[in-house]
Every structure is written in C-alpha cells, then in structure tokens.
Image (cartoon, rainbow, N blue to C red; front, side, top):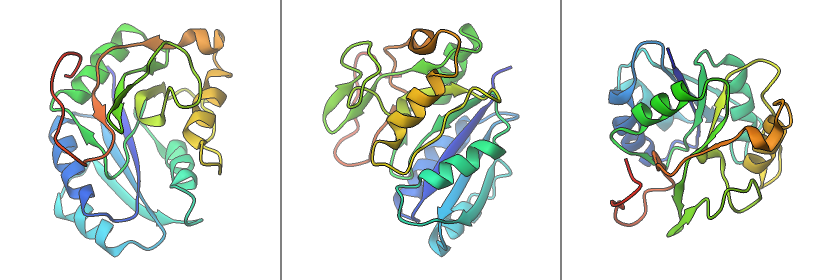
Length: 200
C-alpha cells in the first residue's frame, strides 16, 4: 500500500489554511502531513490545530530564513510514508491529486516520479530532462527509502539539489525517473485555478 508523507515548511501564511483544507480530505490511513514552522509561527500552529486532524504533525525549528530547506531535511528524517510529497504553504492540490500520486507510485515501486506542474503561467517540465528551471521539488515524488534520499541545500536552487542528490543515489541515476503528464500540484494560489487537459 502506498502512503504519503506531505512535507510543508511554513511561515504561517494565511494560504496554509486553504492548502490544508484541500489536502486533508484526500489523505487515508498511514498518510501524514509534516508541517514545520520556520521558527516560532503562532499563526501556523493555530491553523494546524484548527483542523483537529491526527494526520498533521506540527513543530517549529530553525535555522530561519533559508527558504524552509532545513525544515524539509528535518521532516524527511521523521517521515513514515512510503512516498515523500513536497507542498509549500501557498501551493494548491487538485481534488484527486493524492489519489493520482498514489496510483502512479503503485505502478512504479521504488522509482522517483516527476509530474508536470504550472509555474508562473507556464507548464513544467518542458521536456524530459532533469535540469535547473525544468523541474522543481513540488513535481518530484521520492520513494522514502533510507540511503536513497538526498539533501535540500542552503542554496536558492535547493529543490534541484535535492532532486539531483537523490537521483545520484539510485542505481540508474536520472534514468530512474518516471515522467508523467498529470498535474496533481499547482504552485502558488495567485490567479484563477487552471483546468483542462493533463490536470487531475
């Protein structure tokens, strides 16, 4: 059975409530949300507590002001799901997004998956190549296998660093990626929600 650990660093933005409101009804037994405040974030804790969900584990830690990357690394070490999903607190997920992630993951056990995603009005990936600007952390679904997970660096391109360092630990490297057209996650909430071909 595929289970997911959704990892979300947070600054306590109000969009967190919308994200959790769309995400939590999709979770099943064994799924979890690891919500990590980047330092003291009373509003984030309030929002998390308001959902009264046993699936949400909330804690706060530093270092601060590093795009949430230390918080992601900490959550990876505590994740119990068979797949890691990275969603920011201002992202959105389609109504069948988790079901899509689980179904595709079940068909490709042990292999990382790269879904497509809308980013600033354009669709990523543009071609099936792992390169900076063509992939991001929200698109990458990683098997939670000890010894085969990379690290989010302290750089702006930390998600790319996580993807490439994770793939370097897989026997087939970048060739292990399964490329998929579905778009379970939408980056950011700004503007109208897109609908159409390829969206789930």
